[in-house]
Length: 246
Image 1: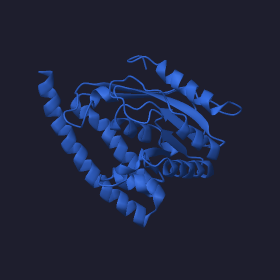
Image 2: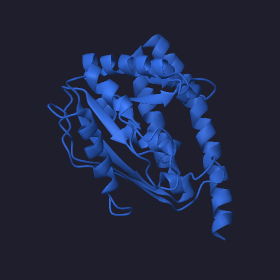
Image 3: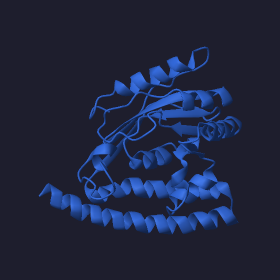
């Protein structure tokens, strides 16, 4: 019976998902070309709210906890574990006042309505995993952007998704490049749980009645600490959050 619900509710949600990607893509194009980047970002914020709360169509829920008063007068580097593509919409929506901009693989910058357009226009670091030099240049460019604008970068240091929930060790390189080019940045870990269960492989079927949780953890002041220690502290903080206790 559960599998029947998975297939039926997934079909409903994916029709909805595809429709809003097309609608908001047109909205982004108009907003960006007529009113500029700020207007386009507002459209993107509401796109991601629509994606996130649309999960209710599958009987699933999302909870985003942030008990910290994060600054808007300095850049932030959000460091998170990575379970699925659905990690991203709640971060964009619930942390929208910080202008989160992602480190993303370059392949996503083409062919996906709304998502590809936003990656190209938002200043995201679009990295080629087979070209280390290009990746460093892109991440450094993003770091300079958040440093100058007091915006935020979002990076998944595992380097790839782990749908099982078993975290891979965090790589230091990307965070290191961000901090070197954005030395004023505050590092803030985010623990993500449940998106891997919701979206274990592919996008069909999704698993209905899944509980997804996001928790913003205590900020880490990187000043006067080795970057390796900063990344280790962020990883340990995320590992310390138990499933369903967020």
